[in-house]
Amino acid sequence: ARPTSVEYVAFFSSGQQGLGDYRKTHPSIVSGSTGAYRQSDGPGFALDALSVSGQFSTCTDDFCFNRDKTLQVSIFDNLFDFQETKNMKKKLLNGFEDFLLDSVSGKTEQLKAVYLAGGSRGGCLVARLAKSLIAREDLKHVKFIVQSFDGVCSPTDNEFGTSVLWPFRNPLKKKWKAYRTDVTKQFKKEHKTRLCMRHLTGGEEVFIDVARSFTHKSNKCKWKKNCAVKSNSGHQYYEQTWTKLGHIELLSKHEHDDEVVKPMMEHFKKCKERLAIL
Image (cartoon, rainbow, N blue to C red; front, side):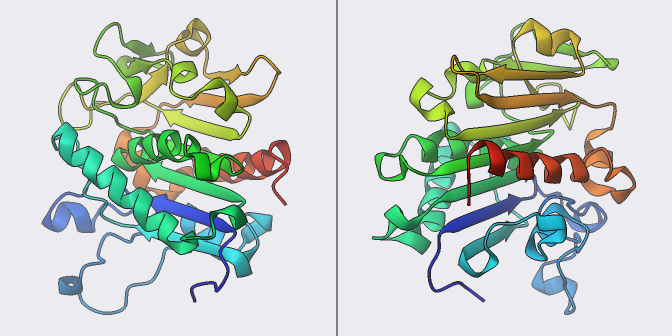
């Protein structure tokens, strides 16, 4: 049921959807989609209990905000497609922002924290949503936990600051590469104290060469499996882990939950402590 008073928002998004059998056989361990969720797929849909969204909804191992005051949203098809124009992506971004803030319309002062998690194109969506939302004057008191699962932004559009120039090779799997962005420039200094972000990146080609995940541009993130970025005050607002898991394997298969889902759940709980989210 929708809470009468919203103090927390949790948003989970799948990536770009294929058609027909491809979509039905590629569920999302992030949003909880089983793949067969459209009306034409028939009745009986249920949220995947083992997904990030599913475990958040049941508050597994304290992985949640205050359930009575949390608006939780799972997006199975965000339409935020890689090939869309810059203008259309901006309209979609604005639409999602308006949709999420509608729950606290006229009451933004009561909002305490926002949790954004997305896979593939959904990972790029939540990164861009975080950048936009955290910069709003009416949300200057709100804390943000952000998680990208092999997030794919378009470097030709410079989405989330990505560039086609000098991509980094995956140090665990050299034939894969990720497009660089400078995370330090995506968020202003005064916003980083309210941010706690984690990105799991592989860099496998998704469907064309420029459709790959992103990476922070520092040399630490180039050579090491794990890297992190801290503010001048010592607050760690971004961390990144390279993986050898393929894009679909990472996003659709529970066989790898110990490497994909569980670390994100632990990251969420650490972020609650770092940001003092009550």
